[in-house]
Image (cartoon, rainbow, N blue to C red; front, side, top):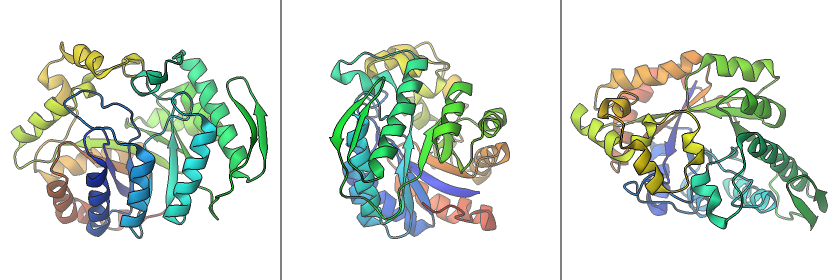
Length: 325
């Protein structure tokens, strides 16, 4: 298993992400990702930098870490032809260390241009076609594509990397796991569900399996719980609601009925290494190859020191850095 770090662009500004990515590499992390959002989930998070600018900074602030998007929606807000160019350029800047995470997105980020937000089945169709468009353009030829959802006319990407980035596809259910298996070079999710990984494998899925776990490191359990409750109350939401709500205000309304325990119970909170190790191990035991840890709150330096000292050594030889971009 490889342990990575994931930075929340909903909480951190662009310069902070770049700075802490460099610090994470120094601490011993070998891979990382940054979320791709137009809006934060709630106003208290307070940030949403443009991910492609941030990645350019990370590429030059790090030397060894692989880095990706966790994840980009290449279907509504931005045309897949534009995303194909952005990802190709980013891989050039990382000199082969970039991996490209994609998913079907949320209305929160994608409705902003006034385009229709379709039902889940159609969104997966769009994602599959978008991946097709991206791969066609990455071949470096002049491309015209007239599909169900996208049109591309006489387009060619001239700036291409020597090694194309792997496309890692997000999945949370059977239908999306099938898409990931058909179209992806790997799989990413946020739940330690062994049965979902089995569905992906049965559908022919290959490549690394990535997961994200959120933690709230703090000097005390109470402080960690306060961070989780204040900044990530949306973690208590279940079902498809997170894909359908359109604004941070809607999410703030949706979480009002939730109790504190509904939210903080899903986080390892505080300074006890065993709680963090147990949370990570749950994903490892479910079958994930890479587990990306997101620290809640602004004290990324304290979190990175804690993981450098107490968590990375605990996994020892498991942290193999087994995948290359």
